[in-house]
Image (cartoon, rainbow, N blue to C red; front, side, top):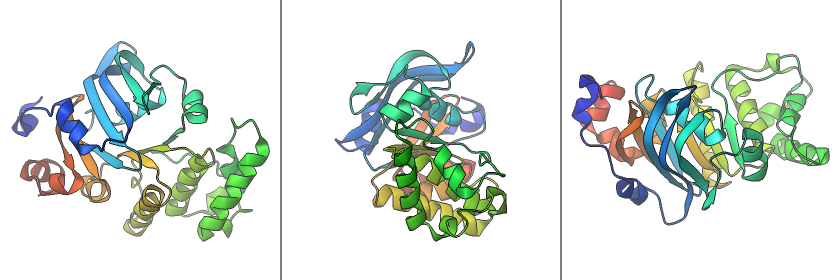
Length: 261
């Protein structure tokens, strides 16, 4: 660790991380070393998150936060370690297999809507690997019933949506496959404050009312920790501090380094 972050002390043990997750652990990462090409970014990384629990990953640029999401979803080279969901190893499944067979959806951080396609067509793209096309239409209809903002624009091109509505569409498109785990990369990036609040309210609803397990990377550490049940502070590919979201918000070292305190 660099001198700037050396004050963060000893890394938490996996037993410390397990205590933050209930007995109903949904997704587990054990001793994972992963990266891109031959470059290893994560080093013996552990993670435990329960069903319908939210975990926020914070830390400096280059710490490996997005690499964790990429590794869970199948976008990295995994050198060692394993990833499990409900006790079943999924380490080497393809992204399509993880989405279709074990219910893991990845929501990109950049603007990934198709601007010239309608809102409805964008939604239906979320079910492109479903065996039955009609299931996609059924799920899209449920989403339209839930979100007026999308229903009112269903036949309009997605380019007419505000930034917050586009983010809602990106999240909703992932829901078409009825995932149990949502990997959310920088949900607040590029949004005005009122839309940031809206997006976190949507994620809160998905976690509390639809029992989604949510793992998110969030550059706005304060907002991410206010939302999440638990948080990990990543430094140089390892967890430097872990705790409840509230505990990390109160931690003076976290505050000084990441919260502007």
